[in-house]
Image 1 (cartoon, rainbow, N blue to C red):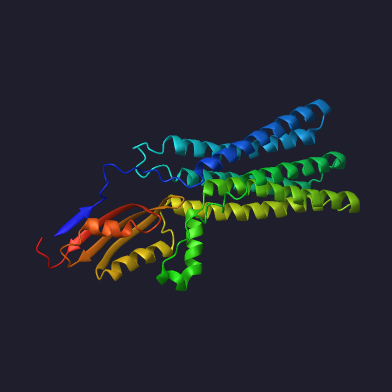
Image 2: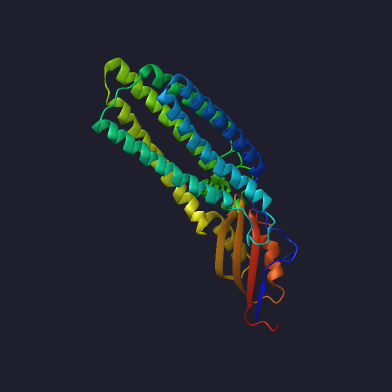
Length: 327
C-alpha cells in the first residue's frame, strides 16, 4: 500500500521563498537607479548646453545602465508584492533569477555592440577629443565605484547565513560549502553588480586606451581596449546566463542537499526510490521524496518531520511505499 503526503501544513503553510536580504537588496538597487538617473540627466543636459556629443553619448549609455538596474529593482518589488499570491504555485522566489537571466542577455547585447563599435573604429578611425573623452571616462568610473559600493556585500553577504554542516559531511566540507554559497546566491543582485563592475572595467580600459593614444599616438589602443572589454563582459554574461538558466529549468542544485536527504533515508534503514530537489528561491529548496519501508509506523509524516529539520528544505512532498506491511 502506498501513501502520499505533501505536508502536515499543506493547507496552511505559505510559499514565500524569498532570499534573506531581499528587501535590503531592493533598496540598494533603487539607490543605484537614483544615482544613475541623476548622472544621466546631468550628462545629457550638460552635453546639450556645451555642445559635447561625447557627454550626451555617455549620458545615453548611463540610461542603459539605469534600465538594467530598473529590471532588478522591479523584480524585487514584484516578488515581494506577489509573494503570497496563490497563482504562483511555488512562490516568487525565482523572480530574481528571471531578472538576472534577462539582465545577462542585455549585458551580452551591450558587449556585442561595444565589440562592433570597436571593430568599426579599427576599420574607420575617427578623431578623438581627448580633453572631453578622458574626464568623461573618469567620471563614469567614479559613478560605477559608488554604485559598486552601494551594492557591495549583497552578492555574497547573504550567502553565509546558514553554514551549519552535519558531522558526517565534514569529509566533503569544501564542496558542500561551495554548493551552499551557490544555492543561497541572489542572482538578481549578482546581475546588477556585474553590470556595475562590467561598466567600471570598460571605463578603466577606456581610460588606459585614451591615455596611450594621446601620449604615444597609439590610436589603435582605444578600439583594442573596447574589444578586450567586450570579451570580458561576454564571459561574465555567459556565466550568469548558465547559472540562472539552470535554476529556471529546475536543474539539480548540487550534490550537497541530495546527499543529505539520501543519508537521512539510508540511516533509517529504508530504501530511497525517487528523489527530486530543485531551488525555489535563494536558500530555499523543494523536494519530492519517494521511500520504500517495512516499518508500519513510518508514514509520510515521519519522514516529513525528519527532512524538515534539514536546513534549506522549505517545501517537502513525501510518498511512502509499504512492503510487507499490513496497513
